[in-house]
Amino acid sequence: MMQIDTTDPKQLTRMLGRSRLVLGLTLAIAPRLAAPIVGVSARTSSARLFARVAGVRDAILGAGMEMSVREGRFPQGWVGMAGVADLGDAVVHLLTRGLGARARLTSLIAAGSAALHLQLARQLDELDHPTLEPA
Image 1 (tube, rainbow, N blue to C red):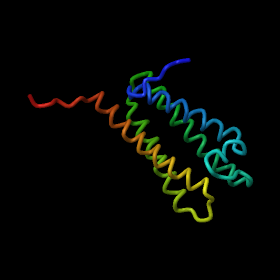
Image 2 (image 1 turned 45 degrees about the vertical axis):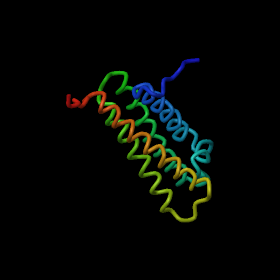
Image 3 (image 1 turned 60 degrees about the horizontal axis):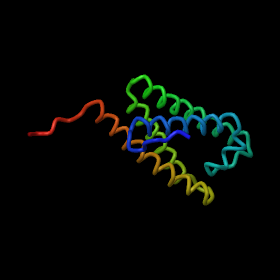
Image 4 (image 1 turned 135 degrees about the vertical axis):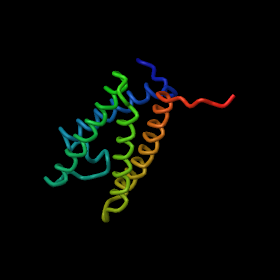
């Protein structure tokens, strides 16, 4: 089993990117299976449509995170956008009436994920642009 160094921003980005890619593909391909994991029902065609849209978005963000680290091409941008997407998810979950407890819990998880991704984007930016400390 591969060991992940969670103190290394690049390794953490790759792990989060792969996780997001897998969750996104699962939502896009099998929304009835995956939607309950994120706190929503996929019983209607409209709900399945939105689960698939969110899945495609997350799969693209996850693939972008993974490839940008591997190729050294502005990973902080991909990670930051994933954080903004998660923040949007958290706000929408909180503002939508009639959602159950699992959806409310999902909003907290999304908010935590947003904070993690935004902080990680900052760390990646600092790796690319180290600040000079005064002597």
